[in-house]
Length: 101
Image (tube, rainbow, N blue to C red):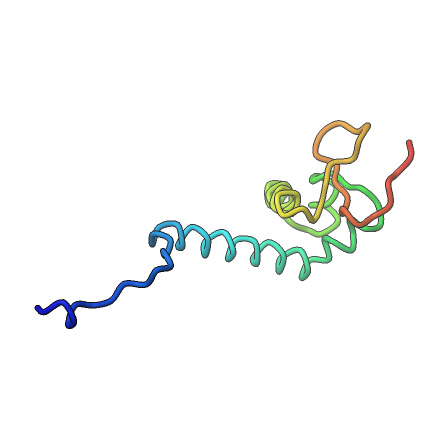
């Protein structure tokens, strides 16, 4: 192959395939968590007042493990947070007002 016939490489380095796949997988997981939260009304519920996974599971009619995982995913996305002065996984949305106890 002559030098002019060789494929040209871009000056911009592309991330390795596995890094791009990790990014896509994380994006899908985040999207899935947000969709589930929207469909179940979780963010609206968290905006009303803090709730723990067990109570949320009962209110929504879902498994407690599912509620715990969904709340953890929302916290990881910055959409929910733990409430200071409470024990366990009591969460509220990050947009809600601070609760005074």
